[in-house]
Length: 151
Image: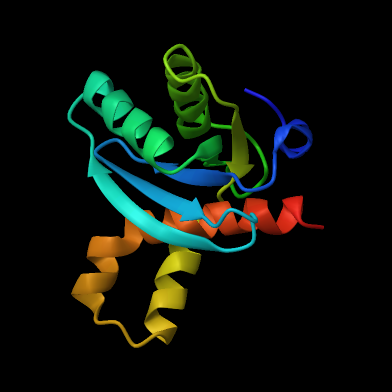
């Protein structure tokens, strides 16, 4: 795992990043353009087991020229790190054993709320918003990191 500043130094132009919103059952994936400007929802993966998820993630990385992964870190509202944050860190450490591109954590506080609010402004019905919330949250997380990288 590297810091966001270290990731910025490693990024080449014409590459893409993905953002992950790790849940216990569902994993949201967002993807950005090759200029690292705009994050969009990509897909939601139902997590059956780690091996299956790694296989799917490797396919996405290869097919889309992915050069880095931003993972939402569920920091507590007071800024402390709890069990959920430790679980995300442990998952990333496991993923790094199988995937050879940089991972970095990004504070995901309120990402699900933000993604839900944005989709409500787009006049999308509630059932569709709930169905897409994971990939929308992943794009929201990724966009926050992209905005940081571009400033």
